[in-house]
Length: 213
Ligand SMILES: N[C@@H](CCC(=O)N[C@@H](CS)C(=O)NCC(=O)O)C(=O)O
Image (cartoon, rainbow, N blue to C red):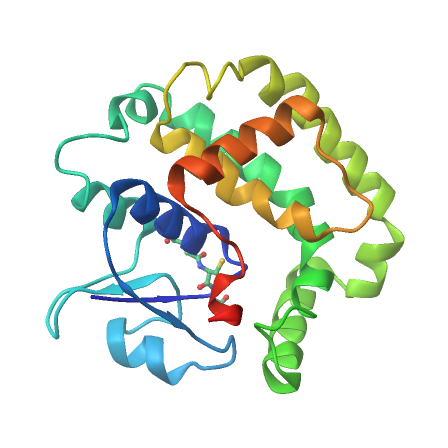
């Protein structure tokens, strides 16, 4: 089975974390961000992650992929079903400042080359404005993120989100927050850091391991 993914992409990280936790083996294929042909040939759209299970079965929705590969419900999917709207809102609120802060740094990780960097930057700047301006506003985004973490997330964390065992919700949260580890001036609170490290240990997640193989 092949997993086509972008290393920085939170939706791709969900699948990597979930597969790590579930012990699902796969071949990792990191695609350059400007490769439109490969994903379009596989599924008809330029969107990753894509799991190619066989020449005829290809999935490209992170949660759908994980649910299919978790037939015994080890990720406690009911915890998400019971509060899907709230969690989706929380994830998209977290995603907004995280993406604005991390995008200008992601492009300098080994995942990108000059062509894919330019492609990514042009595409993302259409939506968010110049990366330069994102950096000028970095304190505003950091405050926005810290306030979300302090008021909406941290109070809900016991060992895991609202509980003592890892669920799909922890994977969704950790995947979206993980990028912040590459933002130089940001520091998670000790409680959030331990939580994220606990999720990473449980899911055998290693952010940049593909580059060191
Ligand atoms: N709903 C999808 C979302 C996946 C997604 O948004 N992927 C982004 C990367 S983070 C993508 O492939 N974007 C391609 C592009 O914008 O060129 C999922 O959960 O898997």
